[in-house]
Every structure is written in C-alpha cells, then in structure tokens.
Length: 400
Ligand SMILES: Nc1nc2c(c(=O)[nH]1)N[C@H]1C(S)=C(S)[C@@H](COP(=O)(O)OP(=O)(O)OC[C@H]3O[C@@H](n4cnc5c(N)ncnc54)[C@H](O)[C@@H]3O)O[C@H]1N2
Ligand code: MOO
Image (cartoon, rainbow, N blue to C red; front, side, top):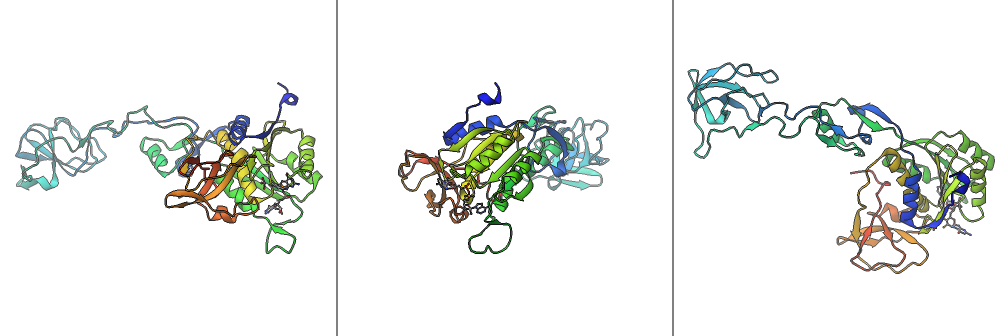
C-alpha cells in the first residue's frame, strides 16, 4: 500500500493509539555488549547457559569427604578449583572446602564441626540427630543444565540478570541497540535557562522528556530550542538521524497548521491525528519517508508527558523488543464521574491503600504529577470506588 493510502487515526482511543504506535515502530539492530556495560539494555535473543550449574558435584560445606563408615584415615586434602584426583577408598577421608568438586567413591560429607582428628584419623563426633549422608553435596546441574534458557529475549538486564549471565559462562550479551530520540522544543516564549521574565516560560520539558527517554531504554540525542520558525523546524526534521524525533508545542488548533506544514514539507505521513485523551489530546504521530517516527507533543508539560506515554513509549518498547507485561493497576479510593469526551490520565496518591486523584492535574501543571504515586488511566464512562484502574509505567521517576 502506498503512503498516500494510509488513513490517520483521528481522535483515537488511548489503547488503540498505543497499538498503532507499536505497529509503526521498526525493531532496531542488535549488538554484542560486555556484561559490565549491559545494565539497563534489552536482551535481543534468548540467553542459554553455556555450562551445567554447578559444573560438577560439589560440596556445600567445609569438612571431609569420606567413604564408608568411620573412623577414616586422613589422606591428601582436595584443593578447591582443581580436580579431586582418583577415587576415595572405603575407610579414607580427605579434607574439602565449600564449593570443591567431591571425589568419586565418596559416600558422605562430614562437616568440620561434626568430626575430630586424632593422630591422622578422623572420628565421627556429631550431635545426636545428625546422620552420615551426602546431603551437603550439590549435584551437578542442580541449578541449570547447559542449553537451558536462563533469560528470555526482551528482558531488561538488571544486576541479577547480569550476574546470572556471568555465572553461566557469558562475557557479553546480544542486546538491542539503543534508539536515539531527538527533541525539538518549539515556542518563541520558551527560555532554556534561568528565571523566566514575565511573559516567558522556562523550558521544563527538556529535562522531563530526556529523562523519560532514558527510562524507556532509549538515548536522548540532540535537544534544540527552535522558536516558532517553520524553515528551521523543517531543516531540523530533515537533518535528524534519530529513530524518533519528538517536537513539543504548536499542536493546538490553528497553530498546528505550522507543524503540519513542516510535516508535509518533509514528506511525513500522519498516522495518529489527536487522541481522545485529556490531557495530551493534540498529540500527533507521523512517519517519515524512511520509516523513522516524528511525535508531536503538546507544549503544556503534563500534556507532553501523556503524549510521550501514548505514542513514544510504546514505539520505543517495540523498537528495543522490551517485553511488556500486563499493566499494573490500583484500586480506586473514590468514584470518578463520567467524562464523555475522553479517557483521562490523572495523577493519584495512595491513601489508606487506595488511589485518590491529587488534583493539580491541568495540562500546564507538573505539581500534581510531582506529588503523585503515579498516573491512572480513567475511562470516559466513569468508575466506581473500589474498581481497579490501569496505571502507567512511571518513566518520570528514578527507578527504585
Ligand atoms: N482554541 C484552542 N486552544 C487550545 C486548544 C484547542 O483545542 N483549541 N487545545 C489546548 C490544549 S488541549 C493543549 S494541550 C494546548 C496545546 O498547546 P500547543 O501544543 O500548541 O503548545 P503551545 O501553545 O506552544 O504551549 C502551550 C503552553 O505550554 C507552554 N510550553 C510550551 N513549551 C514549553 C516548555 N518546553 N516548557 C514549559 N512550558 C512550555 C507554553 O508556554 C504554553 O503556556 O493548547 C490548548 N489550546
Ligand atoms: O490535552 Mo490539553 O493537553 O488537555 O490541555
């Protein structure tokens, strides 16, 4: 189908829009990255163990490997990290440390505190309830077998997944390349630094969206304050090589002509043309001729957050192959009135274990989001107290 035949989704529903954004994203290529630099990256392929774990039958305790009933003649100690050598003969004992490979012929492990050595002979001196056994031996492959899948494709690598990768023999892992997101902040009144003079407004969107970009597993690229300058906007859209270009501001009725004109000049196809959501309604998602995405988010900061979560986050998750689980939910502490025109995204705090909207939720305000425990997805038909509502992944917070 030619690009001209694509019909944009106009005032699409929240979940519908997110699905369209996912569908438009092209997976990025993968690369091999050393474990020490792979935290936060997304595994491109299933990771299989290269070894059995443990790799042989090993002890879980310090003591003696013994064969047969005691007392036992003490032989040469087994050295941790080396093969134990020949089989243990009945009546013999060898000292052994935690994690060392047990010798063939061993019938039991005597813990150090359960044996006494006198003149080269080991005697069994346990408390009453302890029997001679191999229960302190960890059998080969107890935890993992070579070839077992230990982490599946789409896993976001955290310290424990990196440790698991190392313990099963990997030095490096195949991960999705990190998509770059360029940010073009428009608006003549927007100032990049310092205390804003009356009538100007300090750019709060750059720190917000660059941080959210990182939290989504992508890398912020160029951040440019454009001003309301069509030729400059066109030039920047053309020169960007980022997987996603995010613009902010200039989406409102009338003003949007400016933005749409720029999209038209660079040959972009509009795929999402506003969303039935509040705030964030004026969000637009377009596809450049080479398949890269342009997300046009409203200039109001809370609306920009919602627009980012609606179209940029799902696209980035798809590009990096990140596994997306069932969305988390919260039990509502109050009833919500129907809001016929749109899904609402509401900052909430937990009060006695239930979610209550914070207020301060106008699209120009970050105060409500800043004080919140998260964002609720409130359906347009209203909700009952006690109902479970979906909440959004808190990309605007530091993890942990
Ligand atoms: N007549 C109508 N007016 C508006 C409509 C509408 O349907 N009809 N929609 C409203 C909605 S909803 C939203 S959301 C905003 C979208 O505005 P724009 O995307 O055009 O953004 P701007 O006008 O450039 O800015 C809006 C507001 O946000 C401030 N801003 C802009 N950039 C930043 C930044 N980087 N950091 C902080 N604040 C920023 C800007 O100064 C404005 O105050 O339109 C409504 N209007
Ligand atoms: O969608 Mo606007 O973002 O409602 O204020």
